[in-house]
Length: 113
Image (cartoon, rainbow, N blue to C red; front, top):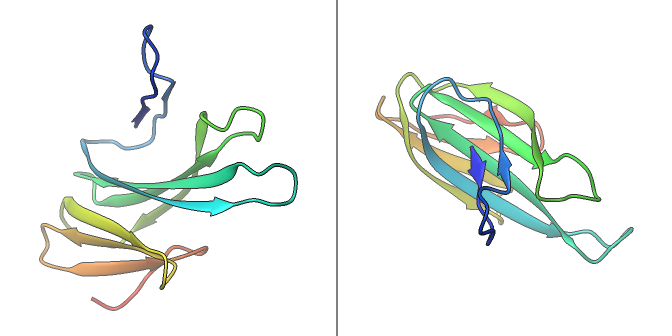
């Protein structure tokens, strides 16, 4: 997973975790009022390895460096589409195995197909 920001010298962050192509990425943005007014962005990725991965900022000081914080399996084919649903607090994925799954947060447990 490569995080790009305007930078004439290259990527802002490269995060390693998937074992095959990353096909989809979605995010949720929550405003943290405790320390700073900066939003906390959580990334969700899925791909040809059939795994959903969760990525969160490694530190508050550099919120553009992400670390892998969760891994969930459930699909039996490549994940081809995704969206984050704020109302349900869930990451929804569709895959090559003809299933749609909802991954509810924060536990990232797959719902019924």
